Image (cartoon, rainbow, N blue to C red; front, side, top):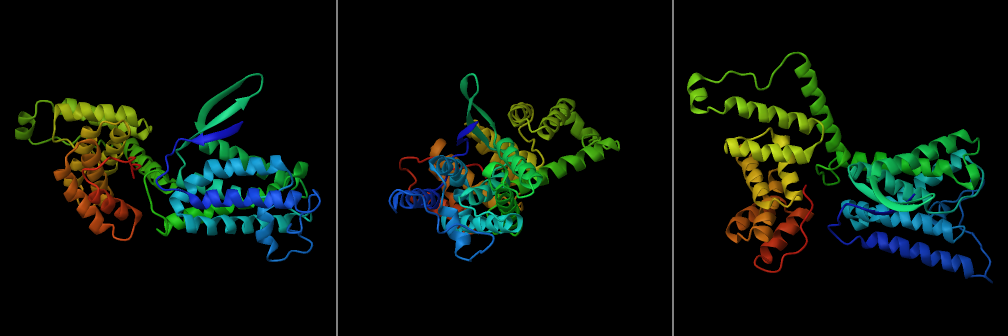
Amino acid sequence: MIPLRTDVPLRYTPWANYLLIAINVLVFFVQRWGSSGELHTPGALDPRDPHLINYFTYQFLHGDAMHLAGNMLFLYIFGNNVADRIGNVGYLAFYLAGGVAAGIGHVLADVQPVIGASGSVSAVTGAFIVLLPRSRVTVLFFFFFITAFEIPSVWLIAASFLKDFVFGFGDPRGTAQGVAHVAHFAGSVFGFTMSFALLTAHLLPRDQFDLFALVQRWNRRRQYRDLRSTGWDPFGVTPPPRRAAMNPNLERIQDVRARISDVLSKQQLDEASKLYLELRAIDPNQVLARQSQLDVANTLYTQEKYAAAADAYELFLRQYYKADEVEQVQLMLGILYARYLNDADKARPHLSAAAEKLQSSKEGDLARAELARLGGAPSSPPLPF
């Protein structure tokens, strides 16, 4: 299987990743034809005599064109999105550090010299799992026939990680079939742990699609299931008689809310958004739990149901005005009103509030840029946070 592309749009130009690809290609041509057409690797990392500079130079050397093409394809597919999340300058440092970590792993496990960007690329794919675990990648499959289809990116990266672990530690030298699997494994571990640590320390911007948020939602669902298993019913509180008389649809509302909780626990977001619209049709005053309301609003946005998404975000702001995500919700509302609902008057207050609260972030820059060009041609929509 050959990866072709991911389903995650870019917010910024990942020039750092394009620069790394260009340097690798340029070094390969210099390396290949720089001396009478013979292949020379003076910058290889030799575990028997390692030098500090070689921990960096070996990352840009390749044995042949297929070695280079495979590494650059994976770097292009996954590196663009990682650079988009980390930032170009930070991505360059992350890439080089991942290569150094991979080199250290190889030096500890083998005695054969090593070249190639595979360790650095493995660090990038390890970070990709943490930053975008729910994304999908289009792959080209060929056996007796050729076809393209989408699979979760986690499957592809995890399969590669497992292969490196088995071949790396199953072979006494860690170089099964001439491949430095331990270096790949060390790069993947570095990329995964470092990006998770950066998210935990809030040195990278958090969003609802990263692994940290995924684990938090899984833990909330686990706690909810544990409570339900003890007999607790979140919708079993009997309302006062007057309120029951005022709302004859109470049982229907409770049923729909219970179904929404159930499908959200199974990550069936499209079905949850459909049920949410049904709930709003029954009673316009209904608001879901904080994260559920946010998940449904984001799903409506991705479904291009912009009016319904704006309404869901507005309800979130009114009900959870002290939540951590308020600034991002205001930014999304400003974008929705300005670009899709053509209501500049409603967009400006939200964009102004987002710009003021997100002073030194990319989201703040986006809010200020949107305020500056209100009324102009719309540009590509941002990702839901």
